[in-house]
Image (cartoon, rainbow over all chains, first blue to last red; front, side, top):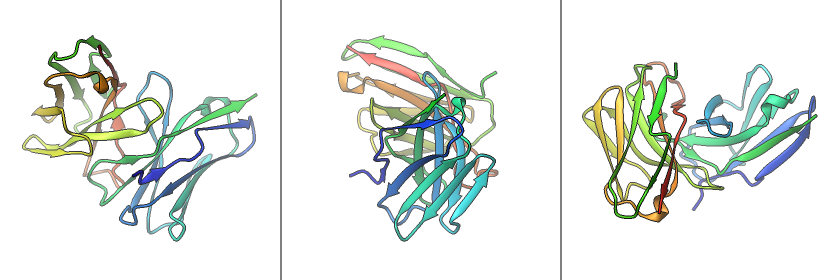
Length: 112
Length: 115
């Protein structure tokens, strides 16, 4: 039973436009949510995170929104750049200490 | 220089062989983790350790064992490798003193193939 779901395996966006990546979760005990970016042949790189007590966190071009009632979070990238082409993983944890539970990832492709 | 290193980067082995994957970190973090990634799937937690004396099973620990030889080193062993352990393996670290949300820092991965 997947506790963190990313239902879009891939997403294609034009350069300069907004990219919106979505993530749903089922475990109401999750209290920290993170986004990771992964390039081929590299390990995942931490991008941005949010606590369950917040509904938005912003860092430069990246904003994460959390809707607890819907158990849904999204990552917005504005404006999208060619270097943003990568696989994006949504992850969640309980208590901020144990391992992370990951979604399957969304492959973002930024078209020139 | 990379903060989290993994050796080997690629390994092909045969069914029944014992194999060890090694992870070293220079970040000074207490917590270390092992994950595996299968094609089209997210990362799944195998084992994690909060310090040298603390080892915890993750979601998919069967068929694996670990050793935390020092704060900076965390090894993953497959006692008798089987083909469905073919996967990409990642080591990660985090720091309970500075990490607010359990941000973990990943190594480059080891691609393991079991024939």
